[in-house]
Amino acid sequence: MTEFKLPDIGEGVMEGEIIEWHIQPGDQVQEDQPLVSVLTDKATVEIAAPKAGSIEKILVAPGDVVKVGQVLLHFSGASAAAAKTNDSPAPAPATNAQTQSPSGSGQEILFPLPEIGEGVMEGELVEWHVAVGAHVHADQPILSMLTDKATVEITAPADGTVVAILAQPGDVVKVGGALMRFKTESTGIKAAEAPKAESKPAPTQAATAAPKTTPTTSAPKDNPSISAFGTPLATPAVRRLASQKGIDLAQVVGSGPHHRITREDVEQFGTRPSTPSAPAAAKHSVPVSEGETREKIRGLRKAIYLNMAKAKQTVPHFTYVEEIEMDKLVALRDTLKMEAEQAGAKLTYLPFIAKACALAFKKFPIINASVDDVNEEIVFKHDVNIGIATATQAGLMVPVVQDVKHKTVIQIGKEIAELSDRARSRKSSPADLAGGTFTITSLGKLGGLLATPIINHPEVAIFGVHNIVDRAVVRDGQIVIRKMMNVAVAFDHRVIDGDVGAAFVQEVKGYLEEPNRFLLHLI
Image 1 (tube, rainbow, N blue to C red):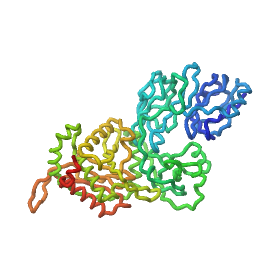
Image 2: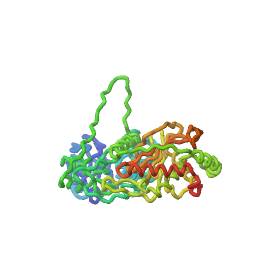
Image 3: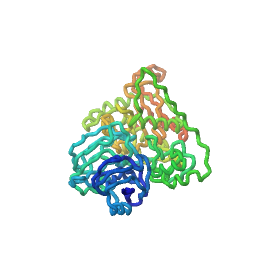
Image 4: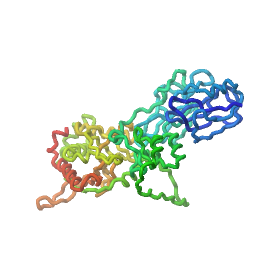
């Protein structure tokens, strides 16, 4: 009998979490046959049998964190020499967990979910584009993952064949979690050629603006170390340490890259004087009864569910409502419609509103800003990147028109149409949804008199637009018919005073009612 120990599985890697056993006690295995998948701080690694033999006893279970050199199982059939080899550092497996296939042709790899965006730690598997046995080419899209930011296409790392699918549509998979087994056509796949997402989002505002923070014993209400799916950003080893110390990672603010919680953060947690924190909101379970159907909150709806609650709990909103006379802008739009169509754009009123807001930011830069809650700083944005809230079958998405202040209304209109179409067809890339500094939301033809939009945190304002209707108004003592539009603009009252918010709306109103004021900026 041989003690099969966890080998050295990478430079600086001291432990890993058992993800899945591929064998059972009593199984006969071949040399180099995959036995177990181990998740480290860096990758999912496949551990293979040292030679042919029989599995006698498995000593650790999925979810256990084991150290390098710790016994995983008892194995018979391996020689003493093999056991000795297993005691010594083994060559580090590639980060895409490659193993030689039994046939000797190509290699079989465990296909993990790669990093798919700044701060994204997990995603929901939406759809497989391939089936078991399918032959695929390098960079061919093989599945779609829905994160809290976008739907991302994951592509094949090389030419090869799908051996087994390990995750199903609807499953939430963490970065590094196994998606499938894949047999390549060559043995030359390197670690750097792990599966990749189609694109990566630009760094989030919090990541680019916030310096490193020191962990405290009481996390702020908006903990940047908690992902949009509600899980702390920490490796299995750090989670294990926190569990041993009885520390709730949700209360720890990470000092690592993008607020990832490090071992040092856990070690230092509780060594500083604590400050009282507000009690967490109670969660209630609604009893199940007959005559109802339940649907799990997941995917994009889960992200909206969490983000809206965070925004409302964190930000004290105030909403300013105004009506705007749109007759002159309606006439101007009618004049420009043909020119816009020739440029391939369908000209709505949103591009004019976006441009008016961008011009108003010159006088009120605090509206085009965000709040760094961790460091208690207002982050003034030099770029004007306006998100356009878009209703889709999956839920509300906010594609972003970049650099609005340097674009014409026709250019803005064309981009809004393209971004909205991709969002509705669930083809938005992370870049489509990244970098917003301000948001406009429109109910379109649904109209309504008044709404109270929720700010897209960490932004500090959101501009709500209602439809344009003919309405009787008084002008110079006379009742006349005018084309009127209501707007409801919500502000973060922590950093924007009422008079500042009102003055900003009046500035935008002035541009829309007298479009000649910014005619040179429109076309």
